[in-house]
Amino acid sequence: MPQPIDFQTELSRVAAVERAQQLADRLAMNAQQRLAQEIQEQKTLAETQVHQPEAKSGEVEPELKRKNPYVGRRRKRGEKPDPESPSAEQTPPPSDEAHSLDVTI
Image (tube, rainbow, N blue to C red):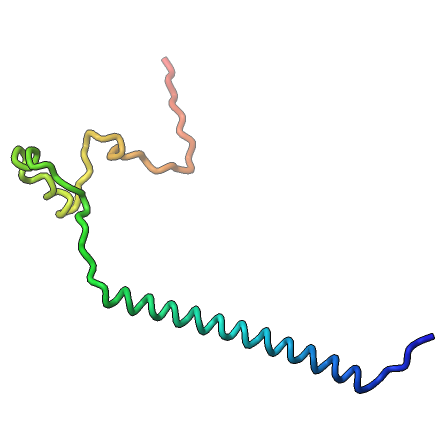
């Protein structure tokens, strides 16, 4: 036999579920606010911190610098490709035409 529905019991169940949902929403909102605050603090810390510049090419040995004082100049002007290197070889772009070599004697 079906149980009779008690209106007050059902309302209290719905209210309990709503309170649990509101609590979960508040916790999620607090977590988002905390994360946003931490990110803002990290940005502020990064903006106020003094950064030491790092050399791009690393340390240059004094002996090599004495022998070749212009060691880093090419990189500053823009390095030009070396004609002897294999990466500098130009390959023709592929064409849609088929190439055929006719060798008739």
